[in-house]
Amino acid sequence: MSDRAEMVVFWIFSVPLIAGAAGVVVARNPVNAAISLVVSFFFLAGIYVLLTAHLLAFLQVLVYAGAIMVLFLFVIMLLTTKDEEFARARMNVMHVGGVLGALGVLVVVVKAVSDLGPMPMRLVGPEFGTVKAVGRLLYTQYLLPFEATSLLLLVSIVGAVVVAKQRI
Amino acid sequence: MVPANYYLALGAVLFAIGLGGVVVKRNMLVVFMCIELMLNAANLTFLAFARQSGSLNGHAIAFFVMAVAAAEAAVGLAIVIAVFRTRGTLNVDEVAALKN
Image 1 (cartoon, rainbow over the protein chains, first blue to last red):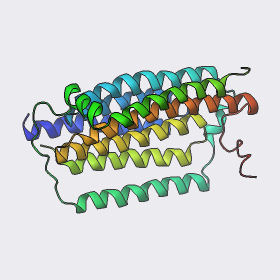
Image 2 (tube, rainbow over the protein chains, first blue to last red):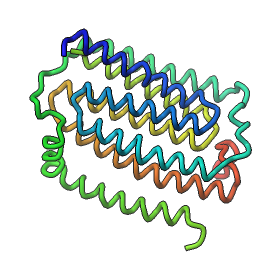
Image 3 (cartoon, each protein chain N blue to C red):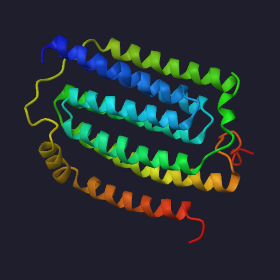
């Protein structure tokens, strides 16, 4: 892909991504926020493909947009709140502080990133980011963290059931 | 080729939106979604640096972040359900018992 085409694709993915992320914060209804988050996860997967992270893009759609967001939607469905009006709160100190803090972080980080000067991407082989390459890394160098992750998931399954169940 | 700075700036924007949402929003579930947004911003930064340096280690870290996010979502949502069952509300301002 030429440089110009890649830049165009980057903007095609990143503008809806930011719009979806903003929609999460702006939306009054939690269901709208969740759907907006799913949309932004899909566009983020597109950005990952642009970074030649094919396995991670696939997992982003499967795990995030699939599993985690379905979990969120189920919980929203279970907890139908009558008091959704509290989202309509007036402007207060928290609002002003939150927006100013987020803008401050944004300005500092973007300034730091632009001060780095242009960082061109390195040329990578065709194997970069594929299931084969990442899987080999996970099963050799990162074998212990990988197994620890399986233990973590087991503990979280048991913990979620214990916390959410009324009587055991 | 798009320089890595663009991806890092995009990650910063996502993180800032998530951070603002965590502070501003009052619904516990939406606060959780904003935390997921911040985790994704970190993932994007890892992958951008992995591509920029030509090393796959960032992919492994992003993979582990994803696994931890899944575990965190499961346990966190269980806690939300438990809190809603005892307090009957999702407003984070009304669930401030630890503060007083």
